[in-house]
Image 1: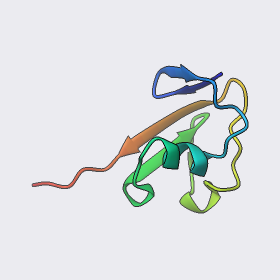
Image 2: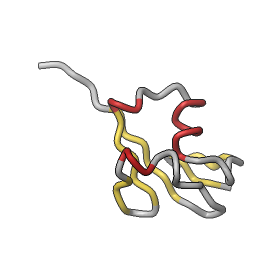
Image 3: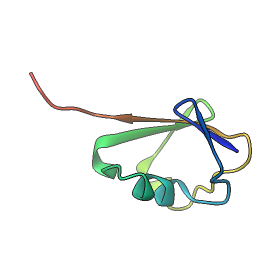
Length: 64
């Protein structure tokens, strides 16, 4: 199981890019932290989620 934003999901083996696409995130408007480290957007497609990973996905919202 992979912990994403506090929820455990059975998605080990997927890449970060696959997860954010499947979850409907706009990759240009998010930041991803994996196991306490910010993951560069360029690494989303090559980073495979593994058992016990902890991921936080933060969406940026415009406004003022």
